[in-house]
Length: 263
Image 1 (cartoon, rainbow, N blue to C red):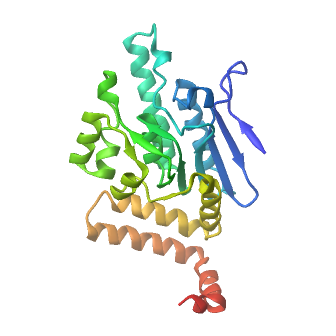
Image 2 (image 1 turned 60 degrees about the vertical axis):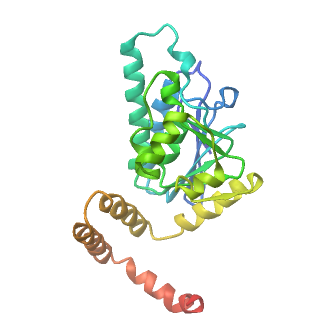
Image 3 (image 1 turned 120 degrees about the vertical axis):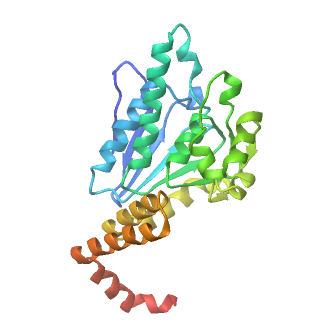
């Protein structure tokens, strides 16, 4: 089933949400005629879609991917023509809200990147838990060369301060293999295999106990913001919640049945 979250019926549907029976949701950027350039309607829809997914107990994993030849060609600068500074400021806040909605989703979110990933496209990808890229993917952060500022915070946290500066200052195109080397992408696959690889990963994630997976994501994210001692306390609190839930017993039973074969 495809759920469309169009703000106005007259507008093209820029985000598709496809929910599958196995607990995997596909969020599809769907402005291929504009190379999925991020506009205001897409910002709002991303926020709406991920709020919905966050509250859906039937979803265990999310794949964020794109239709057409590019993942996202950056912000749609055409929509800014004739606008004033107040509009542009509100538009940027809408983008930040969209990235935050993706990042804060309790479900694991995997980005499947292909083709050009530019500016805001990189922000969307970095808001996901990890990125799998087609071997034809390229990454570029040209915001200063467009007379604006962007990607200064997530990018440095992913690739480091000096490398982030180099990418932003030069606006050079980074190939997928280098994106793996610097930690922006976890791995690459042939472009023809990207969707199948993502589906397999999502099925594996969605097949795990939902509470344990959600708490694992939360513990990693919260632990990254503190020191090791406090991080261990965060993990222990998550363990206590799993113990209280009782679902851990099923994991022990499953291990007793098949786990030893993989030791």
